[in-house]
Length: 560
Image 1 (tube, rainbow, N blue to C red):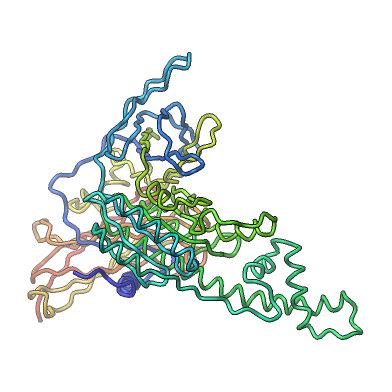
Image 2 (image 1 turned 90 degrees about the vertical axis):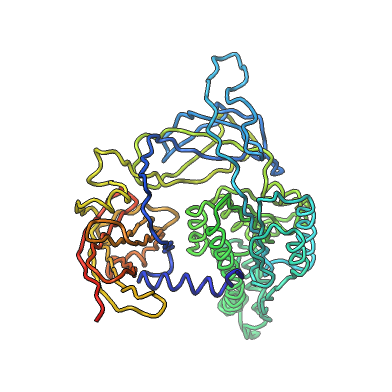
């Protein structure tokens, strides 16, 4: 089967969003068929496991560290590390977990339970809107060197570009990958300059008041277009030039911003495709950098939030390598502004930013396959069903950096004492208990058989949640929540017939939250079954406290 095109994937996502009747921005929906497990298992351990990689200033993984070298903070609260292992690429622990003899009583930490190595999926993202011919040639040569070292049979790679030209879906065929790589080329969209303006980057700096000297240069460039007469004083002529400089700078910045938003949209497509595979998910972003307006950029925050939810680590590689740059303060500022989004992306997803290095092939290898990593575990106490921020740092000062996931969702406590509020979804399907923790209403509608449904009759199930009574956690200026909708059909004897589950990951702006508070959060599913009398069992769970709403409605499906 041919991989879905970017347009097809986008239309599919839009269809799901429209069916949920919620704003597209800030809502990610996953819908799948539901089948209850034959045996329901309850976790008895509250351990949280976190993987991390330590890198030196060149981006190389650092081994030989131990549990006492680190400290962990969960929502700002220090945690005791209860298990720790150093892991090599084969997935096996490589060193003991205890610290070397330092003259102090040793702290014995058992080895962490290292899972078997997962299949690795690596997406190489080429920002061909922001790379010139020389830079593109440079990174292509590096990628060839990387794949020449060989791939593990189970690992797969893909290519995504900003322009969409040259994309390749996941493959372990090195020859196919190399062929696609050879055909990549820059697709720069040059900014149309103004006669009375300065360079695009200086236009950005002028508009956002980031450097006084550059601002004066922009105003000076606009003086010839200001219509100054011999009678105008220098101050009067400068005053006439300022609005012209602002107009010229705004035109350049709007063009630059459009290119940057296109890059973020393409990155979102790459992350969405990665989210659909089962295994370790890595996105390697190769770019010379791009510009975003200062402050919180919603599109950037949305991408980072999605990568965190989908367990995607993003590494960035500066495509310009160790280029010769002028050492002035203005040039340093210009360069830093272009690289800032790459730093924000890697910091927000637990990745690493490889820059100022001509060995890009080595950077790619380090990003995709670190030589050594660590796995630690800690017990934060009872599960609370909330999002937790995670911080891992060295106990003593070091020059190395640590990559780790910035947070996790704590599964709600499923003990019998919390049954009325946090009963597991699978248990709730067959329970006759009505729960009302989440404010929600259910509407049903039966239809008639259509071609291709084998004579089964559709039943439409609509659920509306009152968002005003939901709690949210805030991260990166967004209101975060997870809502699970489980809609099932049981026969007259209570046996399972069919079902669907939808998971909505919410990362809402203030405006979107206000809209949902007014209209409600709505989800619709259609189930099919032969004619007969059924019970529609609907369950809604919110992620902050694990609260549940469950109800049962009778429905008769019959042909007219």
